[in-house]
Image (tube, rainbow, N blue to C red):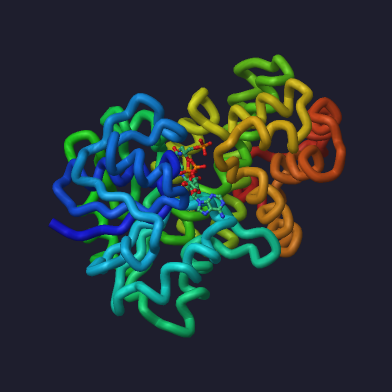
Length: 339
Ligand SMILES: NC(=O)c1ccc[n+]([C@@H]2O[C@H](COP(=O)([O-])OP(=O)(O)OC[C@H]3O[C@@H](n4cnc5c(N)ncnc54)[C@H](O)[C@@H]3O)[C@@H](O)[C@H]2O)c1
Ligand SMILES: O=P(O)(O)OC[C@H](O)CO
């Protein structure tokens, strides 16, 4: 039994806290709101994020970082990527030496273009409290994990023993965990699939069908892999759970916030209207900006990302973006064969 702090009591932090509590670990959950802490401790529910789910009574929630980190050497962080730096700054002073940090967030930071593990390492540069960083990623909607439906994910770390340690923490009969040493590939896949899910949602909102969806998912995977490999990822990682697997679950499920946000944009709502309606994080919006900037900087071709960036931030309509994509210069499908 391990004492684990889960930072972030939204959909994903709560669902993973439930998995860890099911496995007999002592789970301490950090929430920002006092009423959410009271709800979890007294009613064992989290109605604003996972309605209808009853959590194991062993999960204890706190608002104070110092309290949640008491006696803890393993921390799981599940907050939106944009909150990662402020979360690290809040937790580092109370974090134990040689701690292990596992994150479960799926984004890339605009401007710096950093992956989440890079943000965590950068924030720890002065204090040097973290021994190992790992990421947990893969096709996993919180709503289904909380119902204990069979789910598979990957844990990646540059240190394979750390990945195996995390695998053992989470693995159970309904939650199967694989390991992968390719931290870059696993993080890039998890972040970039959100862009492709937004595009799929937009085409559904436009009333387009399955041919279009298949095209976007297939060519989307091609451009995700192209950028990932350029950044140092193993190409095979993109055919695994954190690549293709997560692409399928995010592009085809009504649970996906990215897909739903895309659909509303396709139906004609503005991005501000959509984000106001969602009330939960839509990681793909900021990650589109980050990936677009990164692809431009590195000279990597990412037509779908570029098209989505033009819709989200440059006033191009979804219809115009679709026409522009279809009118692109003819090209080979598998580019490396002809180089
Ligand atoms: N929900 C899922 O099914 C799922 C699955 C896999 C990965 N993820 C990833 O997990 C991360 C968290 O997603 P989520 O679904 O739990 O989000 P959510 O919107 O459901 O909850 C976000 C949580 O982070 C907290 N938070 C802390 N600081 C914040 C800040 N500055 N701004 C906003 N929220 C802040 C919120 O209070 C809330 O508890 C994302 O990167 C997401 O891509 C989510
Ligand atoms: O709801 P989304 O679109 O943030 O996707 C949730 C998970 O990342 C699916 O694996």
